[in-house]
Length: 204
Image (cartoon, rainbow, N blue to C red; front, side, top):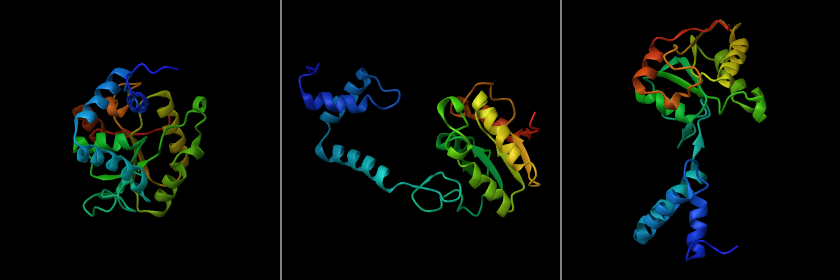
């Protein structure tokens, strides 16, 4: 197939950028042309950052958040309240909640939500390790801060059933987050209030 662009190298670079989520061919072309205008050192620094991210990034052995070390900076911070765990779907949700400056406990990143349609079950997520944290740690509260989608609610209920007999308070974010919303699309003020005004999770 003949390339739409004057250079096969340009075509290949555009194709790779266009594989990124939210990046169409026009945006990919703009990004590639921008990089072509940069000096060699700038482009090498950019490429090296991506290579190092892929090869050297770690996942916290406690909460499964992205980290540069075995234990992330949040879990290793003595000023955080280690008795409260906020359960989130992904790393972006950790960032969204941290931006509110309203939560000072620790996190647990599941790595997704239960979704039979997508072939994702409880064993594909970090649910068992959450249960072990609650069993072995001095945890007084678990906050379920998953998106208010059907999959999020299903995961909330499954986790609740796993934890309900462990003598730990289980709560969920207040309904300031609209049904069907993901946390990353919720403004900081609303999300912050939803964390502060969390309510007991009843499993109903």
